[in-house]
Length: 105
Image (cartoon, rainbow, N blue to C red):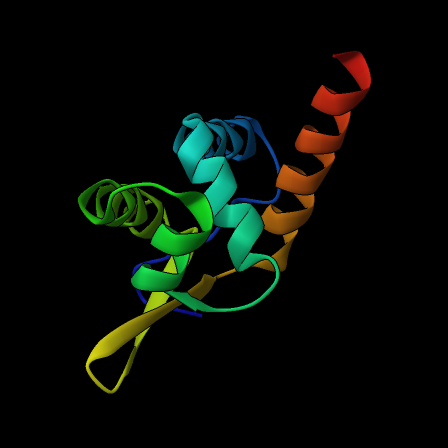
């Protein structure tokens, strides 16, 4: 596990606070889309830009937020950084939320 990831408490109110922080990190639609893409495997910024149709600076900014929240991590791959999810549970949370949104639409 990456050193910048805060362990999630397993009981008590602290667990709710940590869950709230995770949900805040996922509060932007583009961050949900990034996590959904990373759920399929690691991606470099240019791959996310191409897939999401969003400008590179915007994708990079949101990756910084997700990285700061301990949701994604980056690993250097030559001249690029490949991003992946720290925990696959987040991909399931996002997939369930998107599925739910499609059901109620």
